[in-house]
Amino acid sequence: MAPARSLVLYDTTLRDGMQREGLSVSVDEKVRIAARIADLGVHVIEGGFPGSNPKDEEFFRKLQREPLGDAVVAAFGMTRGRGTTAGKDAQLRALAECWAPVACVVGKTWDLHVQKVLRVDRDENLRMISQSVEFLRGQGKLVFYDAEHFFDGYAADAEYALACLRAAAEAGAEAVCLCDTNGAALPMQVADVVERVAALLGASCRVGIHAHNDAGCAVANSLVAVDRGADVVQGTINGYGERCGNADLCAIIPGLKLKMAVDCVSGEDLAKLTDTARFVAELCNVSPDPHQPYVGHNAFAHKGGMHVAAVERDPSTFEHIDPALVGNSPHVLLSELSGRATVKQRVRELGYSLEDDQELADRVLKRVKDKEHVGYHYEAADASFDLLLRAELGLKVELFSLESFRIIVEKREDGDILSEATVKVFVDGERFVETAEGNGPVNALDTALRRAIERKFPEVHDIHLVNYSVRILDEDRGTAATTRVLIDSSDGRDNWGSVGVGVNLVEASWQALVDSISYGLLRGMTIDREAR
Image (tube, rainbow, N blue to C red):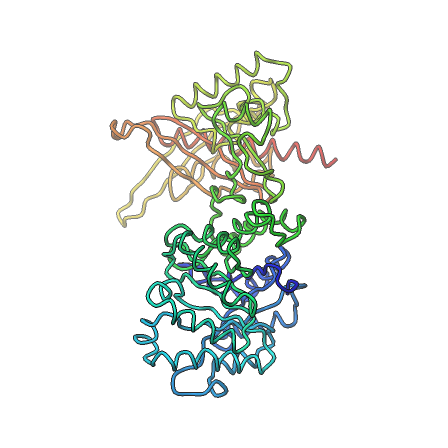
């Protein structure tokens, strides 16, 4: 636990975050996620409901055997049920018997829920809160009270909502956390309410904020709450959560550390933020948001030529922080908007230099703009740009040359559709002819090409297509429209993109396919040379 009265970062990715639609991870994955979040310097990690299901039971057992360093684990539950005592309530007993040192209990603070959901009177709800907290404190737990729907309850009856917090605080709660459960509160409202709560209760317990993002204000509400006296912030990695998600710790942590000078994590831990965000996304099988603040791939991407030129002279002109502070890095996007500085910087990123060759820089820039004018998209096709650049520099690009390809598509009586491709290529003057079948023309073409060159380049089988997308560029021309194909490939270490454009879908696919494989092979040759 963080030192007394310093800010506590409280992660609920593994409980509240898992309520995001489609999100599900195994027990081992939950353990790995918890370990990475702990390594980030987060103080409390909420693991879920002990005893509620076999997965959470096993998760808590594994965490007990695999401690999380300085981070402490919280178990989650509810205040006692109606018509029973705290000591006899099954959920509270499970919290008490769990080894986790922190128990977080959620209770009602909105009288509407007290009447309609709990179906008890207001005084009984206060007893349910105080008795639950008191029982868990008696079992040696640090108790965090999550005041569900607090801001709605405060708007309906401020004094009763505050009475609920007071009941938890007087029973010994370590913290009372104000939950914007519906995600509807705005920063102005949060600021006023938190300031009042902190003045009333801040001397006796911590005051926390638990924000949801339904109005798009979860991060802002969390930051303004700290500004007005909150010293516990609950959130999730990448903002995962039900509906529109929870407050994103990946934006909150740098906001606190870098913008508000709140020393919530070390600089060394802050630099792990981007890797942590992407690790959790991958383990949750969610595509990382490239535009996510601070940690997104494009968070420090520059596309406009004037922007790139300015950043080249002084990064602070268009970068609000040094990307390295959060473990991210800037990069330049190639497009028809690119200026000379954009091309030069992108070339430097690829390990080349155009500083002493202005004519070459202008020629590369013109080729990029001309090709983007007819539909190419180098922003998403780093491999194709690298090959274009290599060609302009006079470096080797063509590992094989095409004589011809032919594709036959056959629809059979039973409804099956078979594609067969024949590819004829030359490699070092030697002619290779191969035929392959596939579930579509591009799949057949890909397989035939790989077979044709595998004797010269066996490493082609290390290159895998991971995504294939098609876009029609001039829809008004119907079936005669120009098509852009983007292919993402990987060799298991890195990913790259390639692009092809044409009025024929197969031809556009062939261009992207050839660029993808050529880049992967050339890249492998370069890595091998450097390794030697």
